[in-house]
Image 1 (cartoon, each protein chain N blue to C red):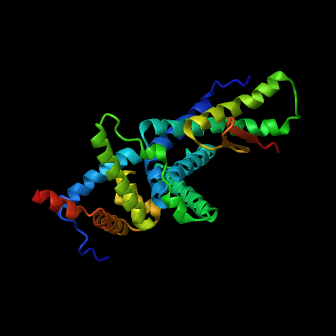
Image 2 (image 1 turned 135 degrees about the vertical axis):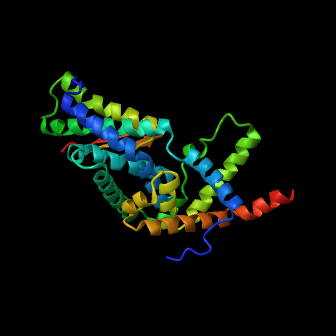
Image 3 (image 1 turned 180 degrees about the vertical axis):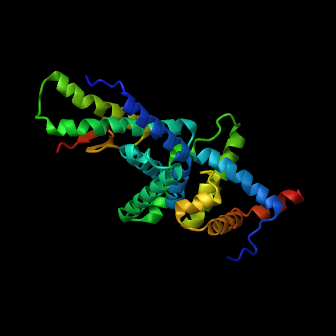
Length: 190
Length: 109
């Protein structure tokens, strides 16, 4: 049987990998979700990206966190490009939703509340899929990835001002698609 | 870059914030999912490390060798079955099979 006790060098690499993973996994998943609109593809791509981190971790540990992030998003862009090249229909990919993630609601809610919550989530799913990819990616990197505009700009290789514009556009479009103003008006009248 | 007409009314803005927070909570990576993903990647690294040695070895060197060959594969398959991931490492693939759960393929160079 193979001895699986890690030596000191391996432990150091694992610690480095974990640091990169902890610092980036949320934003990277948001990036893939934004680019593909497909939760399942986002998970697979995240897995592949971090596998590449693991394979290159001895080189990456010599880089600053900012350079590590740049490296990671370069890999991420290539992975998305590969996915689209191999995809018969990008639209079909975008429309598919992982049932497990979709049904992962708050099970402590009552049936009516759970149903309403699910309907709200599905409405947001549909609206997200209607957004242009560049707007959705910027928005998700902010709300899901918790990155600042300048960090998003570095990842997407655009200016921070462009990121802020895209996020504002995405929010406005989402509000329109979800008819929030109408709903708020209806609530206000009742 | 013009920024006109992009500001939402405060109540619409707040409502959208609440909706997005709820959506992110459900659609983002949960803590459990995060750890599954981390462990899947780490498990695959063990496979990567084992694969070149396996490819270089001549086939059938006894029970212990076969055990060292398939233990990492089974570990990765178990991980794949748990997480639903189908790509389980360099030279190895798994796919759902209605008869046996998962069917595994290993390519030996």
